[in-house]
Length: 279
Image (cartoon, rainbow, N blue to C red; front, side, top):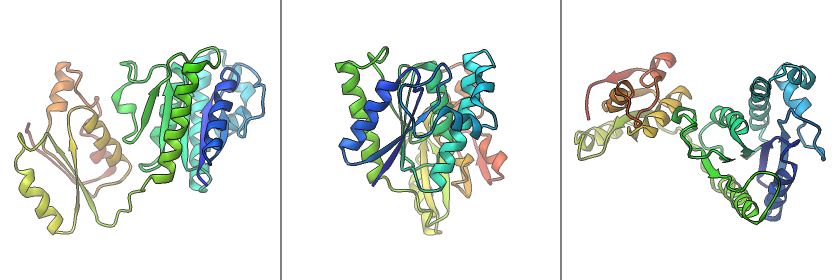
């Protein structure tokens, strides 16, 4: 049975979190709720209390609240949520993560989902989904997001429709997801489509003939972000970076960029990297 970890602030969103859990269970899955709230006591008992989350961050909920700043408090709770989620994932107790939040809840959820490996289903229901306030380089490569329209001050018919879809999506993903096996050493290649970088037609089969799996990324902003994130996870034995327009875009102010850390993950990981101008 697929078990979904539902993350949110149980002090302010208790109805919504319990509704999500009920939706997952009605579809034959199981669900547990992690409370990351810092504003009050929830009206139900979460499976993972905010005390447990704070302890996973090496502190107490009282100390977190005593910070006196909600943003600083949620930053500490994010540390605990990441640690606790990774612990449950490593033990095989969690098969998918569904997070719910506004702006600060989304910030915490982005930390949690970015820490999870590719192939672990992850979905965020957010009031700021697809917004410019979310930097592209904070999005996990396989993250799903749903805009939480009408999602404040309790449940309503629109909110129920959105949350039920989210519950079904993450449960379905947990049942169907195929974790990358790594049967062949993989090489990341940054490209911009066949019409621009025609050498890919020859390069890819030649690398495959030598026993490598070739993973080509479309470097139009999000593609470069995904490639950097997966390099950071240690997915590749080499990187061919032949489409550098994201770097130029970052320098010149275009929105189609991959953030200021583009081209840096391979160096940090010690992965051989070929870099050449192109595109």
